Length: 156
Image (cartoon, rainbow, N blue to C red):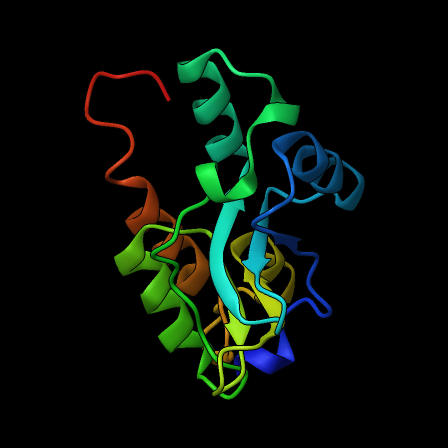
């Protein structure tokens, strides 16, 4: 199974010049938790999550309309490609501790987004026949992502 078989396309996105109020509205109306950030050529230059917005505003006592996406986005973004094997993309998610990967062309242009939650909808339980994408594959990636976030004894 390839990433292109399960990615969401087209992906919602924002630009670095938008303010956080605009980006939050886009997240809300799109019903998603992250937006790839693209430049004028549709090249992915970062990613903005709802958590990024909350942390930026909560730690700096700022108004969302006064802070740009560029000031809050993550610049070191993990990506995958449409032709990548789905298990390779799950490995990237696990290693980079992310739930979403922008899907980009070989030239870096946004093609879609791969979300762990959407992968669950495409997974089937491994009943011995070993499907291309099983629940165990997706849950294994989720466990790898979450291990760093909740040290023993801390609230989830």
